[in-house]
Length: 224
Image 1 (cartoon, helix red, strand yellow):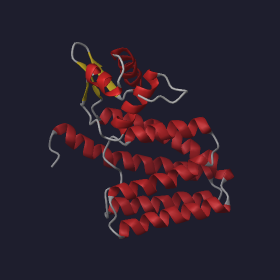
Image 2: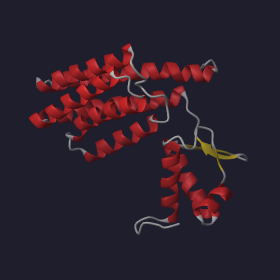
Image 3: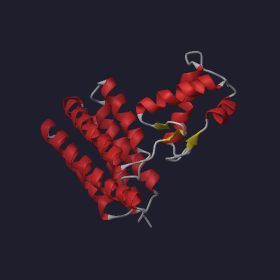
């Protein structure tokens, strides 16, 4: 195990496990076996247990007494919590960014949203659509220059990545997202930070409703 100079074994293992969980390599419910992971990382079980406990404190891992640890299952309750916080933080970031956006920022936002529409028209894969969607929003938030806020938003966005994607293909919901982006952009161009924040809240609420419907079908066991 080659460690960066600034990382402990625990932090390195926690980072690697986190990456695997968020990437879906360790699916929800996947058992995290201490001995097996210690062998994979070429270390003792102690830093593995510490890493698992660290991830449990973030909600990514669930520890069941006398059973063991697993990648946390997805749930509608967890998703609602994530989106409630995301909506508050992202609307704040939009409001903070509004007076700081330059003509170059607006040009890039227009380009990203047009690229998203073109990708939808072309029947692009969901991964491409959601990458462009994230790029559009993060371009706004980065201009807020509140680095702690941006970091929190990115972390929550990563957590939400374990759930069904908000944009799934060439359909009405995806085109609606493109239109909502344009409305947010118009409010920002008009210098109406409050309106842009309100539109961001409505945009996030609609995304949450769409994803919640899918998660609840999974919970009921009637997902096709």
